[in-house]
View 1 (cartoon, rainbow, N blue to C red):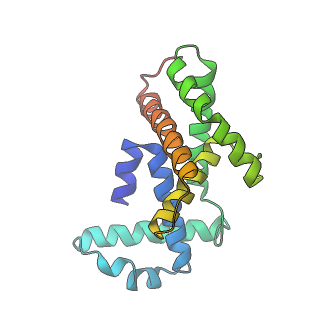
View 2 (cartoon, one colour):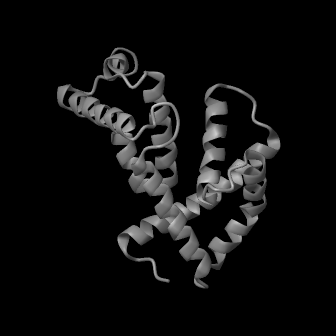
Length: 180
């Protein structure tokens, strides 16, 4: 909960990736708060109030995942909304002539996006989500200590830079300081 809050303020793309990881963590614990408590949460000692808040947060996410039918795959609506906001901002930045560096960064990763969409058969998914999928996949490979192809690592690094730029613009947009 605390990590999510910090990431949401610092880097919205990292926040989405973290929340996707939380969804997978909850699935790995069968959307069972008791199982989560006994395994994952048993290692946290943050004080009674903080632990209570953390359990409540995870419990609410579990309830939402059940209600929204994302028990086995898919993403919570709150996470889908965040990706939609990022996609909308991405589109507005591209249409504006005030952000040529953003457009340049996007066009640098566009060949990767085209390849991702072609290989994954996910043309119906927004480009921003395709890119988040790649970063999430690379993150999972690294967490599992599996090799990441050099070309994939290079693509992920470029995509991460572009999404970092989009995240900075997101913060400005949320603060009301971004002008089109």
